[in-house]
Image (cartoon, rainbow, N blue to C red; front, top):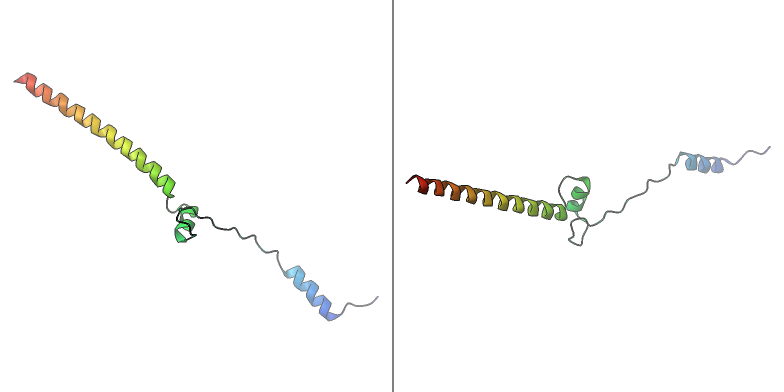
Length: 87
């Protein structure tokens, strides 16, 4: 039985020790500015909201604000009408 040359042993040992490379995920443009920036990374990690989520929450807040404003106007009208009745 012949022995393998030392050079071949080193190569096979190196191959065995070498781990398969982890697949790199490509980052996508989540902010919509056309570039992949730190902002996109932070959006991906959930540190900051995406522009779409911010727009959605802004619309929700606007609707809630309008509803509160309508309630307060109605309450003011009711209060003023009660004052008028007392006089």
